[in-house]
Image 1 (cartoon, helix red, strand yellow):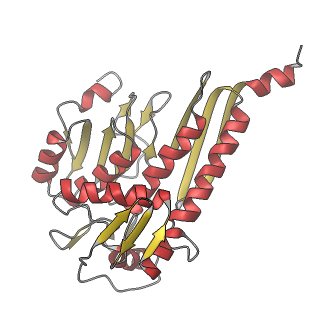
Image 2 (cartoon, one colour; image 1 turned 180 degrees about the vertical axis):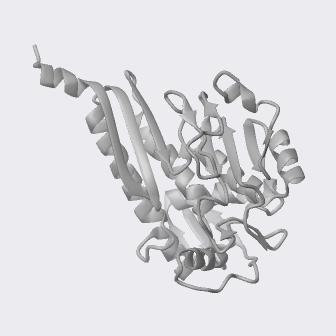
Length: 288
């Protein structure tokens, strides 16, 4: 028979927090061999961040943007999904804006006082895991959700449950989770209880002088239109991430129409202090 220490190593709870994607990732697991599982999860997140961080000169995304081509299965998966969302949002979600993303990040970090004044067009080609482009790409609207999805996969196992959260992007939670208020108080907007993936976007998360990280190349505009957007998505966290960003960039009526028409997605848009949920959003709210 094993010792109590052996038993705890095989069955128990584990919680780990670490920095990833310019935010704090939280990984939790309950069940069999949780300590090894959360360690594997962190290694997965760190490895993917190293490949997908456009601001890291040695990353696969930097190679793609600097050389115009890269062979990397993770980059190819994200680009393929990005092109899907480009088509489905009529160009509001646009991965062709790597130059704009870099300029915005430099402004928000205080490294530059200049904002991008124009948006880009370009072509992207996929051949298996090889990506070729003639314009710098912005994959940040999908990369964090992708990392959450892949990290959560490392926790999945018979006899074990896991949960991953990264700065507002979450795998299906193992219990109730709060939607953070954009108004700087401790009262959550809603308490969610769902088995769908979650993402939140809003002007309050990263902002400088009234400008945030959201942009709409179709309207040639910078900045989120709403205080907060929360999306729950059946497909995966990458889809929730993409739709939260897209809805944040759209005027209220257009955001409501897109969210209502998108199968497998429900959303809550906070605009001028007023809650605008889709018809099915309250099904994901605790005691709604």
